[in-house]
Length: 315
Image (tube, rainbow, N blue to C red; front, top):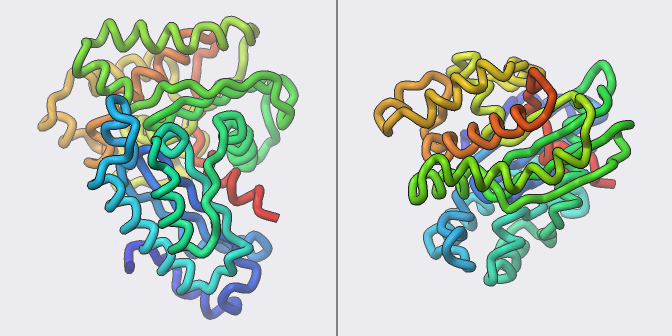
């Protein structure tokens, strides 16, 4: 549990549980926990743990036994952090996304995990996921939202596209079964050309409909990992990733580098966490395709997104 708990001085500055809220994001590749006191601007815990809950869901419609066990183990660790900071159940919101939307046995996982946390886990729709992501992204834009705005949140199991001409109002949203893990599997089994075709067919209708020259913001693990690699960050530094810009040319070079590297080559890339190595090629390819299909010349990377949006939605 030591890796989960940050900044123990927090306990000295405020009573446990006082003003604390917690957001939990149960994604296809990672589970994330945010414990924060907004009034004091203090975040004792912000943790991302690779779980790979969606492992194998591209072929099957059930959560694998190993993935199920990994997920429950991390939920138990999250519960220990929540208890340590005495976060009240009514101040917790936990949301499941694509893997839990798709898996036939998701209710079994939700029931067990909810019992551990003491708060019912919600399986949110792709549309709500997109709206929460936009709220999280906008919370990190200190100079106010740019517009027209296109936010693409690239997860392991899905990609959410959000168009907002006058943020925070949403004009159009789409949740696509198109994620880094899925495309990485397509690359491995069918080849790069098939993966590119699948991405283009999925995103083309949405991007054609919005038109214009949007400000493009990329969020999610694939986008932030690409930023960390572009910056050569070891360890990952959220403050440097937030707002980092990558132009078309650099994204193309980065994508080529990731897709051409073997396992040993990926291990040598500075900024690439080992747990992301297996899916980053597919994620980078999705990022690059979105940039190419828009008129944006540069993508802005957001370290903030769904997790922060879930937190902001807690009453």
